[in-house]
Figure 1: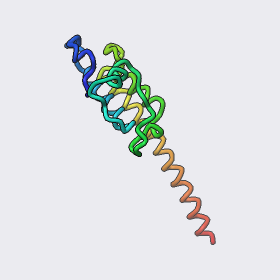
Figure 2: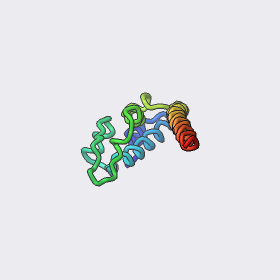
Figure 3: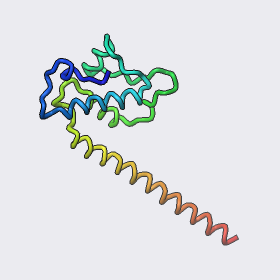
Figure 4: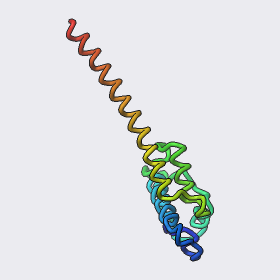
Amino acid sequence: RYLCRELIEETYIIKELDKVDIFALGCTMYEIITGQDMPGNGFRWQQIRNGTLNWNGTGNGNCLTHKISVSMKQLIITMMHSNAKERPSSKKLTLFLRKFIDVGLREKENEIENLKQQINILMQRMNKK
């Protein structure tokens, strides 16, 4: 279910074997986000390996596609690219995810700081009464 075409066809390059794992990780993320089981074969299997991904989900309540950013979808599409050379290396993926997480953390830290300031203002107002 998580095998890329080059692994099945044995056309992978040993030096780029991490790209096989990147594809599998992308499949796992896609499966979690859409709530769809990865097909083991058939038309959907072919579509996915050709880069055609369905982001509509299953409608069973497990779909998270409305909660992820366009850049995260693009990352998953890149991870599952039909051409292994177009997939990020594990090193590049790690750097991207660190930046992505750092931005999210900074935004949350700013939100927390703003809330703390609002609490302080409210407490000062209450103490004046």
